[in-house]
Image (cartoon, rainbow, N blue to C red):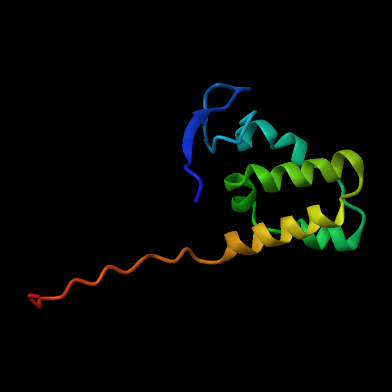
Length: 106
């Protein structure tokens, strides 16, 4: 599991973004919001990118994949699979670790 910390957005320098050590250029959702707007004509891609906006707000990776599709008009098979995998993982409710405390003395 990667260590996450918050860093200010490099563009607006107002909002904090959750990043890891691999993140080179952290941008907040507000700064990338305009890049996410565009018309998607392919019905398969339209279905792929039809996920809740909260997922785009939480993940720079999902935003980056959508921006790349809007910019270049296509994605590789690996990019599509990675997008599906991350979106499905984020849709699942987060599991809390149960801590069981017993009254038994050992």
